[in-house]
Image (cartoon, rainbow, N blue to C red; front, top):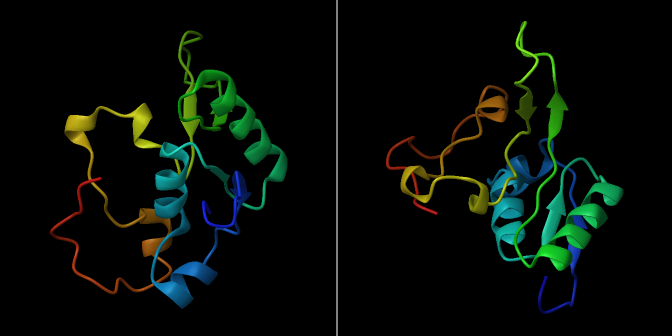
Length: 120
């Protein structure tokens, strides 16, 4: 990305990269976004551009998530979901580990054992 002077990307998520290169795109996208090279799923070019603009404005990694404010009967909570291309910037660094993406792991065979997980 840096060599080609690409500032952000939108990547096809489902299963071509896993099948051909053995890596879930979320892994690479998370690492890129952590380094201020924003990357969005499902060829979401407008989402990637939005993440890039947020990263430029804040100087920190950015992310987009699916937001559902239907958290049972509690109006003060929401459900935020994404397949997890989120940069580690958004997580407690003590608890980070890289592991198999559970949604895709059910569709594609694991090529390496679950343990040990990789530290990010």
